Length: 313
Image (cartoon, rainbow, N blue to C red; front, side, top):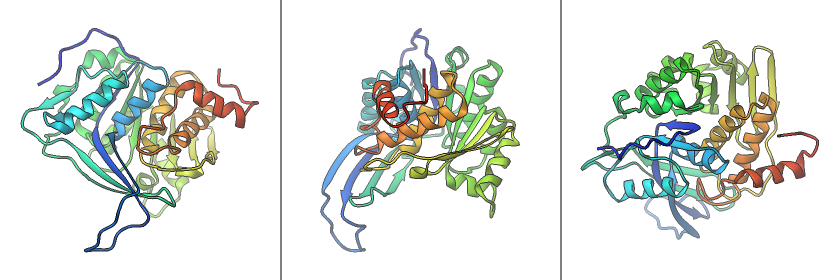
């Protein structure tokens, strides 16, 4: 079933995956057949597209999410988390009697690195017929992830036809993803995706391969090292920001949401990447994938201290 349709217009729509993240901090990865006490523990919403949408909402855009969840406790937690972030969930699909998506994240207390165990639950894939075309066509930007490829393909095609800016969070090269790329204005990929789309090649090789699909720019995120971007005009290497990192969970998802915010503000690619790096870095200063996502004032204060000569107006 679907929640009641809302006439409220939105700036951005996220289509893809949502989940509940259960995270725990540990001093080291446990051995087999052992027990290890966690030093901290929490539960919050997660998922690439959903967390990106939360990021865009915190940064001041009217955002909506289209995805799928079960009618179980996990589904209730996902909806509650999105609503608390002022994300429109009127077009979320809820499947009766199905188990929702879930992830357990073990975080190394010293390095802030994490290991993720996750499941899609028993949900059916999001089908193109379950999208709301009107909402997508009326928006300014669409963000899709690679976990719902059939729906992502349909959404990207709808957006492209309507002049809506499309950003893809290319995390893993799954079946069907390469069919989506020609409809994307910005391909923002993980290092894993880069290695998959250009096996044995360099990051530059991957950027070139992605750019050949017709995007305005291709980007590879490099964690704390920042990101590398390419357009027809050349390559940009943008350093990351050094912060006291507590947890890197969701940093890539947050980067993608912030990236689309920057694009829609009309900034040049260099500023967009600097901004996205800053938002992702601030996220890492607090536990969980969403707790540390800053608002626009926090980001501008952070950038103003570190880059006072660069305008983001």
